[in-house]
Image 1 (tube, rainbow, N blue to C red):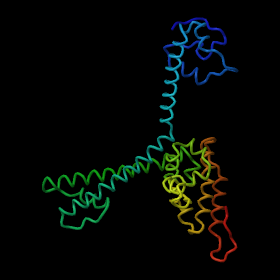
Image 2: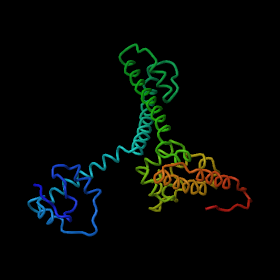
Image 3: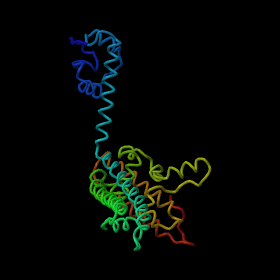
Image 4: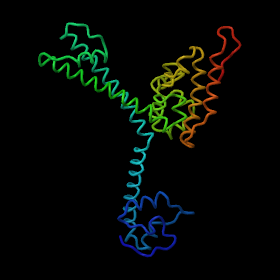
Length: 292
């Protein structure tokens, strides 16, 4: 490749050093033209490359670099850190609970007193002074459980402080942990903001949804949003309505967070009023029907 004086219609490569992939990325990403043209021929004519094959090699290298940098920047975005944190929190909790069962079973065979169960039992064992190599291994394993449980708590604290800065409306409406789960399940705040309310309603219930699509189960009324009091605390006969209403407001909250990035008081007032109407229905024999 070599330089030259390009014509005004030379294309994205005008003024770009062939060895500067960052500059090429910027030109490809930000450049525009009113109509297409034979860019490979223009690149040869302008002296940027010696052949069309060389042009396409350059274009390939530049676009691959641009895509890789876009992915890297995306993965460093705040919503992606929230996604990783909530998944790490769940991994730490799951692993701690699984190992705690092992400690309980193993320690129960070694120690005379009742250890209880779960992570509490692991904390009990971790505080003991081992008397032989076998007890040393059990105590060491218990200490790992305690460390994982403590890390789970630290990750939860991070999520609770970070979620409101990433998605203020979603975090206030759903709570920071559920908001983070929704962002993680969607793959990020932008994908969540583009989802219809019906999809948000069943996020986390994919297995049940696929079973329904195969004709093996009824349609799920809710996914992970069931953990919120608005759904879980509503009478079973009203949970479908509650889940739809909640998911609709969550969709609006996600869009407000992604596109505006500021708190919208009206969303929260409307949701509270809607849930109050749903929960105030008279059952049985009341006048309230299905409120879609």
